[in-house]
Structures are given as C-alpha cells and as structure tokens.
Length: 197
Image (cartoon, rainbow, N blue to C red; front, side):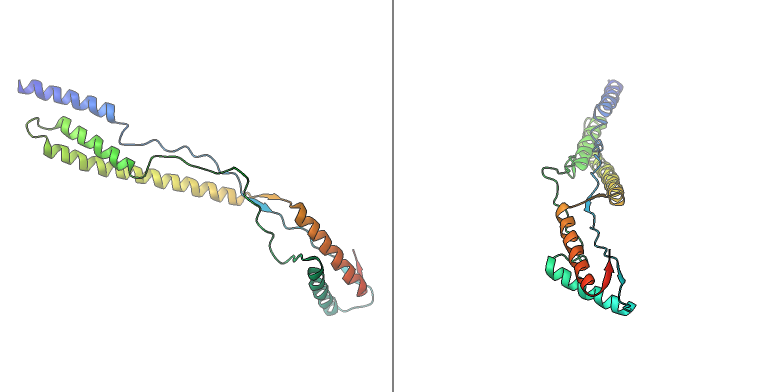
C-alpha cells in the first residue's frame, strides 16, 4: 500500500512539474525598436567677405564680430545658440508592457510550494512545502533578475543605435531667421567696404 501511494505521489509530482513548468518563468517582453531621435539641423549662416579696400585680417575679424553683433540685434537670431529641440511627435509614446515587478518571485514560490507539497511525505508535508516555497522564490527571483538585465541591455543597445543615427530635419522658421541674419551681416560688411558673397 505504501509503495502504491509513493508511486502516485511520484506520478502526481511529474504531472505537476510538467503542468507548472511555465509558471516559474515569464516570457520576455517583445521589444519594439524605438524611432530614431529627431534633431533640428543647424541652418547655414556663412557669409563670405573679402577685403575690397585693403583691410588687414585683424580688421576683417573685428568687423565680422561687430557685424555679427549688429545682425543678431537686428534679426533676433543668434547663430552661436544651438537650435531649439523639435517638439515631440503628437500622440506617439513608446510603452513597454510586461509582468509586474516581483511576479517571477511569486510564480516561483507558488510553483515550488506546490511541487514541495506534491512530493512531500503525505503525513508531514509542511517542511517540504516550505522548502519548495523558498527554493521556488529564489529561482523565480533569479530568473526575473536575468530577464530584467537582458531587457535593460536591449533598451540601451537600441538607444545607442538611435543616437548614432539621428534623423535631421530642417526647420523652415529657423531657415528664414538665418536668411535674415545672413542678409543683415552681408549689408553690414558691404557698408564697411568688403566684397560679400
């Protein structure tokens, strides 16, 4: 009789292990690639000036500085400031769903407790159940930690890849301000006796 009970315990334990094998681990969350970041391309503010009246290079530098200050005051555009970041796209958010934190520990503890109770001595299942609970919680926590580290590494790799390949866009308003700045700079340098193009 006792061997028959032991045999049924073993069969029940194997069936329980097979049925609950997926409970101690959670499937990794599928990662959707992030869109590349969008950056505003700096507008061209280059103005070429050549001395038309024999001005020295030092005089050209002073005049360029003075004209740049004047053009900034006239247009409100300062090419030394970085362009403002573009507004985030409307309605787009990256949301990654996954199991709640600690769910691996809970699933492992439940699986371990069930297995411990199934394989325990039927007259005293307490110690084996507690041992299974503790062992399952430790295993579930280790599995969850490994999955979290892998997900963090994937996210870091995707962010590094997106940062390496940014999408550059041209801002028409910024381009118009830069064109006004170039015109003001050209007019100032022309008035000081430089050949401007």
